[in-house]
Image 1 (cartoon, one colour):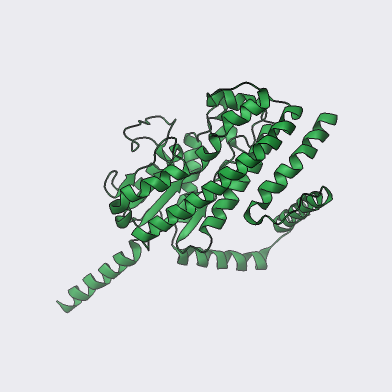
Image 2: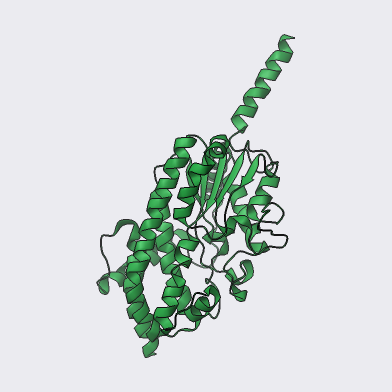
Length: 347
């Protein structure tokens, strides 16, 4: 009898340890998904506005992997078109659900930027439009001279959007933590849907600059917040947008392949910290002991550092360096843009 009771107690203790977030293939207690159409699965086969649980979205695949039940232990309250302000306003209405959640995943920010697209298109072409597909085409097909003027006019707009986004993310985290001090919170970083798109040209460069500023603001907003992390979605989408989004159909959303990559990214991210630490230590030791030159004469860390130094040197030469904290990448990119565009035009 005593043995049975001890075994039961040990099992209960193990379950309590595993409850917040278990390794993929295990089980999370309760998962809540919030945000925008990236999380609803918009554009996927079997996607329905009134039922986000049937398509092969990253959230649905992760929930299945964790052994969760749709609508009960896995709740998806993402809303197509939502901005960071709307997310912040929604959270108090979901207080009870937030309180019961062990894992909260959020995709937000894309629509904050997307709402500036018609205004940018108007600045580029002089023609007003409320159609996002038409605005996206204007973004892609405008020339360098049009961009030089538009960037100057849109800089304060982008800056305001990024600043408001940062405040809304901070406010959302405050609410989530007020209702649930211990849940793991994962924000999806924004990817560039024009990255790697052959015909995007200057549009991809501008998009990269603005999206980088949004992600920088997100990093600052979550910095120092215990249990709040960022999933590096650009690492699995950027450079492969043609294959992993519907951008060739003028739709920025991930396709099935893109959702699959986001799912795998989260699956890896949600492994227990102990396993991650052990793997990192093992990898580091193996690298030190068995590192062999690959014949290219390059080192990833060195290349990255060199590239950063090069960008900063260029910025210095053009007088673009300024003390702007989290918005350094954004401000520098916008400062550099007119010079870069002029060079392209002069060629």
